[in-house]
Length: 592
Image (tube, rainbow, N blue to C red; front, side):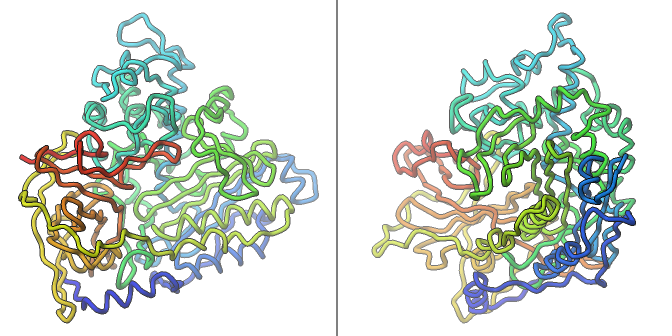
C-alpha cells in the first residue's frame, strides 16, 4: 500500500489542525437510538442532543447503558415504580460495514475491565484462599513476593513490601511503562518488572500502571489454576447473566462487535476504521483491559454495583474506598478532589458522590459513572480514538444534569476546548552543537523492552513528493518525513534522523531527530492499516508521545526522557542531563 503526500501539503495541513473542527462521516446511514423502554429515562430532547454531538464530532457509534433504582425512577417518572429501570440506547454505526449500534453491539471497555479483575481478587480474599505454602490465608496486606515467585522490583524495599492493596490502588512506585511488555504472558510481564525504573517510593505517589493488573491476573491463575477469564466467567458473568460479555475478541467478532476509528485530530488524510485494536484475542491483557460487553450487559453490571445480589457488598465498598490521591486538584470547580480505590475512581460532581472509571485502547473508549447515594448509574462506550472520550465526558455530565434537575453547563465547550491545541517543542538553538561522533545507528537493548534497532533515515527537500509505504502488520518502516510532519514534531532538525520499528500494542515506531550535541528529540508513532469493507486502503497513524534522547558515548548507550513512560501527576519529573544518563533517564538502552 502507498500513501502519497507532498511535504509542503503536510505543513499546510498541520497549521490548520489546531482550529478545524472535523465534520466526519464513517460510511453507512445514520441510525436513531434503539431505546428498549416505552417510557425512557432519557428525555427525547437529550437523545436528540446526544445524536447531534455524535455527528458533530464524527464519532461513528455510541452505546449507553443506564440504570435507575426504584426510588430514583419514581422521581424521574413522577409515579410509583417497583422495579429498577434499565435502559439502553444506541447511536450511529458499529463498524465499517454500516451496521447500526444496538443494545447487543460489543465494545471493548479497556480499563473499565480493572474493576472485574479487582473484584475477582477480592473474592479470593473474601473466600479465605490459601497460598501455595498450604497454610497462609490470602489477605489484603499479603505481600506480592509471598504469592508469586516471579515478582521482583528494581526498588528493593518496594519489592519486599508491596502488597495487594498497593498494586490495586496504583502505589508501587512504578510509572506506567505501557509500551514495553503488554501482549506477553502474564508470568513474563511479572518477571520483567524488575527491569523497570521507579519514579517514586512505595506508597509515595499514585501512578497509573496497567502491569499491576497483569500481576493480579497472574495471582488468580497461581492460586486457582484458572485464568482470569475463566474465573470471571464462573463468579461474575454467569451468575449475573451477562451472556454476551467476554474477554475473547475472536469470539466477540463472531457476533456484533464494533470497529475502532481514527479521526483527524492527530492523523493526516482520511479518517477510517482500524478494526480491532490488537490482533488475536488479547487474553494476555485481560487483567488491565480485556473485557468486551454490550449495552445490555452494561446495565446488569452497573445495577449489581449499585445494589449487589451476587457480590458481597463489603467488596464493592472496599473497591470504592480511596487509598491513593491521583492529583489533589479537581478538574473543574464542580468536581471534588478525586481518590483511587481498587480499579475505581471516586470524586464528587456538583455535590454528589460519583464512583467509576474510564477506559481507552486504540479505537475503543468507555466510561462508567455511578451516583450510589441516588441509585443511578451509566456506562457509555464509543468506537472513536480521538473524540470518543471527550464525547462521553460531555454526554455523561449532560445526562446527570438532566436527571438531577441541575442548571446546564457548557460541558461540550469545556471538554473540547483543548482538543486542537498544538504541542510545543523546545526552540532549536541558534548555534546547535554538532551531533556526537559516537555512531548512533545500531542495536540497543533494555531488558524489559527488548532491542531498539535505530537506522538512519533522510528527510526530503520541501519541493519533493514523499512516498510513504508501510504495512503495520508486517513491520515495514514508515517514511520519516511524512511521520514527523503528521505528528507535528520539529521539522527544522539540526542533524541526522533515525527510526526504530517497535511493533508493540500502542507503539509502532520511534523517530529520533537531532537537536543539540548529544540531545535528540524522540517522537513515538502508533500506526495501523486503514480498513474498508473488502480489505485495506491506507494507513492510520498518530503521535503516541514525545521526549528527549541523550546519546552518551562514555556510558555506551542512550537514555530516554519524556512523557511516554507515564509518571503520576504528583511524582517528581525526571530531569534531562548529559552526565550520568544511565542513572537519570527513565529508560536506558545499552548499545550492543
